[in-house]
Image (cartoon, rainbow, N blue to C red; front, side):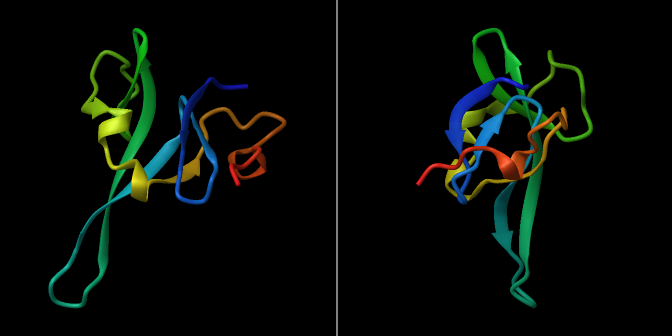
Length: 93
């Protein structure tokens, strides 16, 4: 099982280290299509950070998890599909 970060997405799913999340970026001006940023959650020392979704080097990160826009974050996938997947995790009410 992966390590929980203590943060939750908009659906109440807990965010764990190794999860792929998406965060609202902006709404396109022509067709009003929502644009997203995709991140992978990592741990750097004692802080939880986000990094480029394709980058697996834990030393290279973009910002802290709490500063990346968690009010619009959604968990898309987990890196360790063990006995419990991300959509089967205990949700916050």
